[in-house]
Length: 415
Ligand SMILES: *Cc1c(COP(=O)(O)O)cnc(C)c1O
Image 1 (cartoon, rainbow, N blue to C red):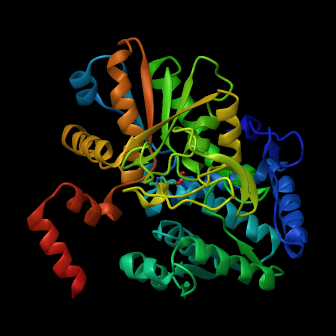
Image 2 (image 1 turned 180 degrees about the horizontal axis):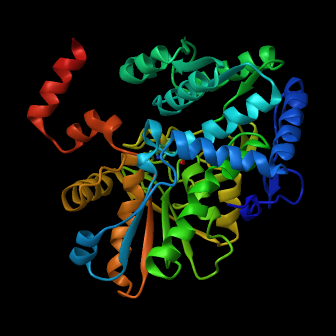
């Protein structure tokens, strides 16, 4: 596998069209420069990518398979539906691709401690796993309210040796955890690396995280050629910050015949205030926040809106600057899926294929399943199943209105 496939060489350093950049306090400039140098050096060293692939093969089930959905294809008619199985990764989602990559880079830089912030806890578990494996000290910042909601993830982070810090400022959720994490970094950067979880934040994070996640697209392109003898007509991925989408799209960006479709959280509907569709609904505005320029859900004074989604991983005000640029260029089409559609798609995919996509991934299925019947049997489409649904058991039981399970789970949780 070649690192030459990496597609996103920025023009102005760290910019993709008008988006990107690094808007951080002076004190962090040197640390980001050091990170850029270490990343550039690693990227130029073919042995680094080989080491990364070797770790992913021996530790996280890579290459993840592509599964043909025969039953759904027959049910819907039209395009043949294929699924890239990122749910089979260690820790249950694509996040580990990025986290292990950054871990190897940290080791190269000679730092001994990693920090991260987490909302639903998935990125925290992946980071704590990496730290245990690579022998690094690890601190995870998490809002106090999120800790209460995500007990099992907190338990595993602690078993993995991470120090989980409850953040009691502000709304006691992700945004406050991000601030606490940045404060830590400003004081500890000499021996500490901040493991950012998606393709957002200041340069070089969007580029670096896309680089590691591009392993999804590189594998998927070769697998589709091998299995179907041709490239897929369309590739679908859900978009929170945008890392699983950027990763699978990276494999197909140069193939003009392949349409790339990103699916955002439509929440209660894009015509309500309760969604996280920054690009699909045309509701987002260009702005600068959390270290980078992109499209955010904010008002004209720059005040951020509250977002809403049944999927915690998509519930975010911003989107990766590379995706904002690809949207502006018309290379990636953006759609939104509502919570109600997501639950329906999830039910269908579980019953018909025995697949259990995470609520985030089910967003990509919504748009794919809607569009498949309008294509021909000669077309193949590919859906990125970014993660598995285990973590969503409470939410799904609630959404499907399963009273018996709801009661059982609530009693368990209360104990
Ligand atoms: C975190 C998460 C996402 C959202 O993150 P991206 O950076 O947009 O990929 C999507 N799917 C799953 C399963 C996740 O855990």
